[in-house]
Length: 269
Image 1 (cartoon, rainbow, N blue to C red):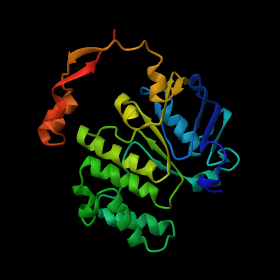
Image 2 (image 1 turned 135 degrees about the vertical axis):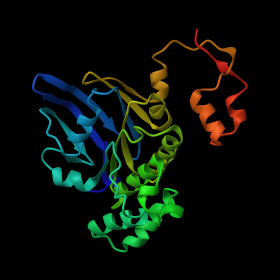
Image 3 (image 1 turned 90 degrees about the horizontal axis):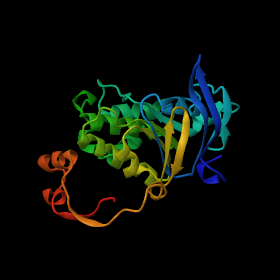
Image 4 (image 1 turned 30 degrees about the horizontal axis):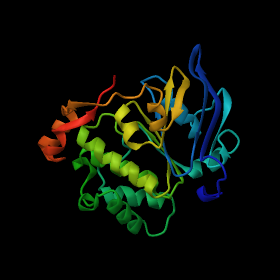
């Protein structure tokens, strides 16, 4: 079965429950993820995001409910699920002694793929790491390591990728680098399940957003649908004040300073 042959959702979760002793982490979670889309599971620390991903990746068994990935049930066909996915955890799993290219080629060889060097060079190009490919990863910035980590998870062309808080601990510039990498994934048809606690990250990346709170999905929809939950905005002219992130990026040359000044419309009555 391939990603293209899936008739239904690339990921389906129904009534998922998980407890650790008396602590109920998941209390009946339901959501679907369409093939080739970016789905953000948004929630604070302890909401159950990582537990959900671990169940979907067959690393943890649910107490109740069902889940399928790429058409395969995670409980009854775990080997097929594992062949369909890649998982990038909260910390970059790269070898700092090796170069970026060597890290990629090593994973390609472990997956028994032909021409590991060509695969490594293609991924270095896709993730804007070609110039740094021959350098040891120990010299990479946080954003570069994270992009390399994501690139490594793509080796084998898995139709579904789980990104568990991929920008945790990164500075604003590195976070934007990772955002570009995630958008690149979806642009190539990969289904992305992204967990995050950053509101702006979900807003920037996701086709659909589900908010997980105290073990339950309390809202699930597109950004436009979520905005409709609030009263219509009252339009008025206000002076736009730059955010700290905009100031930071403008100072270091990330964006044009003219973009963080001026007048805009907005406000909510």
